[in-house]
Image 1 (spheres, rainbow, N blue to C red):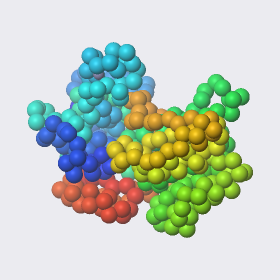
Image 2 (image 1 turned 90 degrees about the horizontal axis):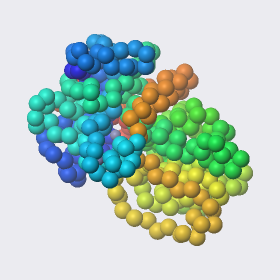
Image 3 (image 1 turned 120 degrees about the vertical axis):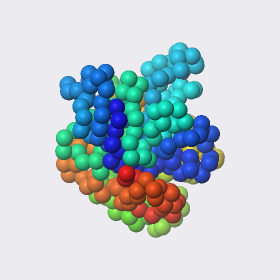
Length: 349
Ligand SMILES: [Zn+2]
Ligand SMILES: [Zn+2]
């Protein structure tokens, strides 16, 4: 299918790609968070299931950027085929997929995107969800998967894992953190506490469901933030902590913020900003679960769309997008992200 791109997110990965910090098979068209309308659709693609309906021209769709062409030869493809993101040779549109060969149009920062529907998961956007919200599907998949990582189905009596009414701390209120806050809110969390140091972010964190915000400019050291989280959680620490800041120090701090027997999910360090000192005794004594969350299974797009749709009922989901740049001005979007202005940038055709 040929897709008329409507909006495509700018993400941390794009910053690294643009900065030349990633080994990719150039030429690459950036953009892995796109939403657009089907302009032309092939016969085979028309027969593809889209939740009881079939894809058709004019449908607004989001595409899982990771191709389903798994290599089939690596350890993970052979032994963990249900974990497609582990494939050693994984290809992601807009990241490490070359546009050098026909059909060339394999990235979202463009007017048109070519999608071989047989090799991608294509999700129809529910009616009533505008492109400004649907463009958040990919980051929402990352965030909702991070929250779901903390679930423990079936062992409620152990008071382990995320349960409704649990206290949740989200460290870092960038796009991923904000969507984690919204997910926690919609999923029935109790007290949600956001930690950040940028006015715009703290403000929208509250609008998206944070009951409390901890401003790092007022709570300047780790000890004061740990004390504040304890104060807000009956003196025991948070049931669940989601690290979305991508700063090594936040990882060490997040373990401190988690209660004994609680869950700490690391989703912010998609790239590698370095190391941090950890006290193993704390981990042992707290009997804490530390979980990594890397990308998402393709079907997470369905969950993400449901969360976005439900979020629209009472959360200002449209306010997450603060800046739009035309494809021809894409470099400016990168500079704007680097200058830490705004929340989420998107590219328009
Ligand atoms: Zn991304
Ligand atoms: Zn593989």
